Amino acid sequence: MQSLYFLIPTVVIILLMLPIILEVRFSFNLLENRGTFCIYVFKIKLQYFFFEIDGRQIKLQNQKQTTQKQLDFDSPELAFYEEFTSQIKDKTRLKFLEVYYNIGLGDAFLTSMVCGLINVGALILFTGLKNKKPTASLGVYDIVSYNKKVVEIAANLSVSISAFDVAYSLINSVMLSRKKAAQKQI
Image (tube, rainbow, N blue to C red):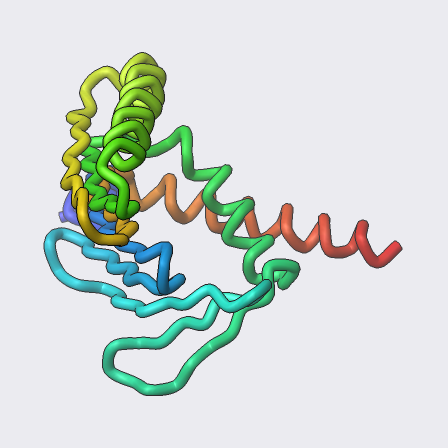
């Protein structure tokens, strides 16, 4: 009977070590400075935002609510997100990354040259990423619009990470961002 009490911590430890599959979808229109950002966990939509870049601020709007939240680039919230992403970057396993873009500059020659430059830059970036994460599946998909002006970029990213790594990175980033904020005040 006493061995059944060890079952509860064993289940908790197993749940902490199981990978969480996170998918992020991002799209942005450079001409309008607007885009969308969506986060899925195990193919279930967790958050969906419309965002707009206005000067030095980002306006976020939730899909269900019409309220808007403005984040300044010097805010402590963005400092926390920056620290959290740097903490969690090495702990994640990249499953796939797909980049889509639709570019048209009105001139066919200029459009084809820019698209070729973007393809070469993306492939160089993917080569470096593939050296660090060899099991990742990477892809670049382009649509070239020769006769109209359009600049749209989209990305689809899927990673897996354990719940323990997320909790550890969250706690560590909170402590480090508070420490940096205290040093700025001095």
